[in-house]
Image (cartoon, rainbow, N blue to C red; front, side):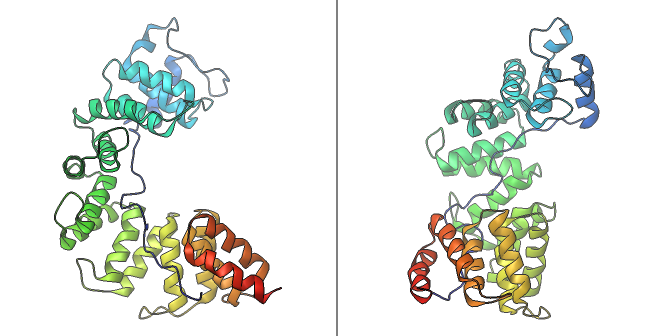
Length: 331
């Protein structure tokens, strides 16, 4: 097959890629340093503090939350997701909404746990969401959209996305845009979808930037403009957005945007970034095509076969179908 794999964002998942968030420490590095100081920890210490230590300040929910963040991300303390979970739980049980959200995130992604616990995640997201935390509203909405840990309820998911989007949460704005684009939980409205994509994209949210490029490419809620599409793909790809790497590669390969010269070398490089760093199936297939056909570099059937097999693992039929003919050609 010589056709390009040009599915724009995701063929099976109509949600924002950052679907479940963690709440961040509002005070940033200063508060993290304060949390370490409260725990009596120096920058080079190899031992993390634990709940139940003699210092009564460790019973403060904000300190517990901050120490959870430090342990989760290795900020001045050894990275320890299991201990982060302990700190988040201690703070969450005292009503700290940020810790409740992060505890939900840990349960969804089995951070510091032996397996995922989506039902428990939903419980903690609900606690934080009812106090108006946008990250928790978005994450709970995603669980309701997918039926993960809770019965699927698209109208409820949309309502939560709306609440978080109104607070300026870029992930929720993107999820809400996708609902309006696809008509999931709401009547399809491409103009509204475009507006939400635009709001999130201007906040620098890579997934929304890619989708805004798709809107300009495919005239979704806006007049077609391949030049603007290409510009938004470049912005998203610069942040490592794997779907944008594929779309950018397709743009370079076709050269169909005014002022954008066809450049198969850049196309191949973009596909390679998405394939290697983003583990993106369509990028793997398109990289295989370039290697098979000698686009953007010397023909290399052996490497082409490797990437076709990798793309086939991602369940791309066109990649699976291309393997046998290439094997016959090089028998």
